[in-house]
Length: 180
Image 1 (cartoon, rainbow, N blue to C red):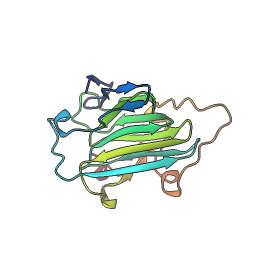
Image 2: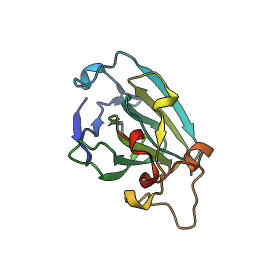
Image 3: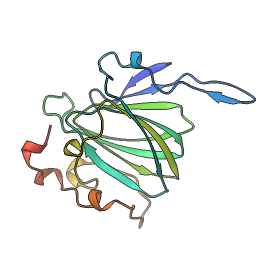
């Protein structure tokens, strides 16, 4: 790993991955436990997601699960919002673009709402530190104006959402007991 860069939200960071290449291609390690000394990756699940352009997934948040994302191909626009009341960046949001060409990893701690818009067709690999638990898969409306996330969508373009994500409530309507 070349470098860890803290994001605008406490605990969220990107990691520049070492890339080795020649005229035959490139190689990079995507994940190592030792890059995350503050995490216990004892329960690990690795997922691969494919999305067509103009798909929006999220915003999702978890109480018990951290995510580490690495796009393999394509470009995603990531939306992040800090829901953790104990965090110094509580109530702050951030939007960033990551491409498969960047060789960059993104760490998202529990309690940070996260989602992405596929700017192009996309293949995303992500590691989580807990097995999937539907009871810990919560959501907030991606387009809630109170979050202040500028997704930078082209005028007149409506992203495609899953039925579940389309019914996520605005933050003000979520039961406080369901928030981190």
